[in-house]
Image (tube, rainbow over all chains, first blue to last red; front, side):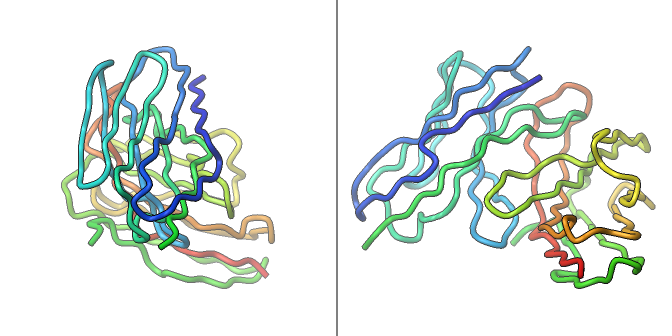
Length: 109
Length: 115
């Protein structure tokens, strides 16, 4: 059974203060590692898919990386609008997604 | 804007009511999903429907029943729910099937309250 563990549970940063969120995974065979952003009361918004160790994806202030055991979501010079819960998930296809518990990120002006 | 549309956005129902949640995707995807999300918890998979085959999370009670009228539509029929079933219900779709790891796209959810 896939297991996905995210840390920290919550993170409070000042605007412009860069940091990283961690996602460690234990899966029988990685079919995909996914990052989502979720705002309160809304559905998760897809950010990135990573398939292979060493792979990197970027979008605006966000960069996702993957190793054989974990993934990082790096946030560079964050703005208050980056405040959200960031979810990591593995799986996909017929088995659906297994989510971590998420990191609740707050960016203070 | 999401291309997965869920209706209604909010629903309040009594424990003896029968209601349905509706989901439509406009991306030509062949797999659709229902997830349940309680407050401050991650989404949990309830059902997968793809190529007319249904996969069920065995922990989901029978008071929830999915229906897939066609490859673009997915309904979730609700009957005799309990207050603990109150949650955000999320529909998603993806292109992949089998063991493929393609990403899923989510709708904005239906906020269900059972009274």
